[in-house]
Length: 119
Picture (cartoon, helix red, strand yellow):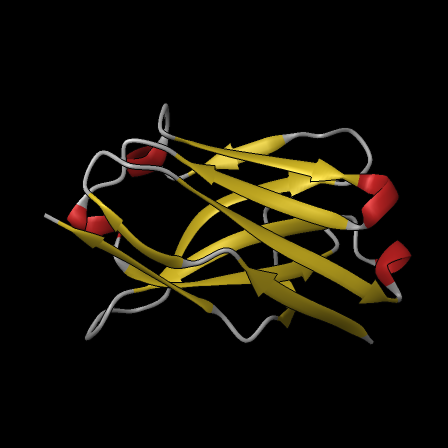
């Protein structure tokens, strides 16, 4: 089992920045990839970005390229999502996920952290 705990969400004005953190514990060695997803009210959960623990390979959804950066700190089993130039449409609950491959599937999920961007 893998436990994931997100933190760092909050309320920010458009154009501002936030950094989300996801701390992983448990059998993390069996899950080489981590990802961030988000779900806005009334919408389906959407992939945002993913990264591997081993080589740092990353994947981003087009809508966040150039604004968001996913990174990892292996010694702390923590993955980050640095979000810059935030837009109101980035408002959502952001979830951390763990899996074997950078393209999924995703076997473990965190509880989510709310990000609200005001215009």
